[in-house]
Length: 172
Image (cartoon, rainbow, N blue to C red):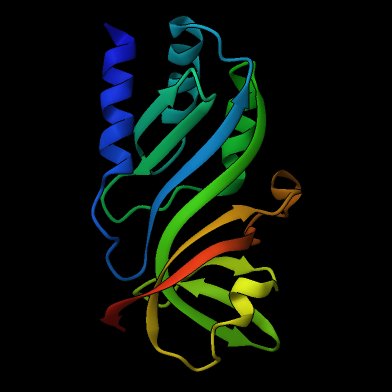
């Protein structure tokens, strides 16, 4: 019965509504070594031990785990690969869905939540190049954590390579 619960939870996470202004929506980590429901249970337990994690949905077939934060919480993206490793599996990348303003300061871009707190540094790429500095638009973004996220000093924001950024109707 566990795989059905996991599948339903995953579908609910994927079908969630458009994110509110300035928040982490979810993190998806690709995992090598998931072969059975016991593997999924072990990984789920490790991931749920992270601060801010509300729900974990694991898909054994695709080898992914989707972490959804508790209300208004942020999950430390840099801690996710370590939690996967601690459960005995190999992390292969973390994808982030979030929303917020994109602020530019000293030639560095950051995704900022509704309270003005930076969530991620943004890597320069063609998606970021399409965003104008000073724009107060709220963006729904998707991006991949740029390694080496696990080696960052404490308090350092992880770097995110945007794969998509879509302006939403809300302004901050």
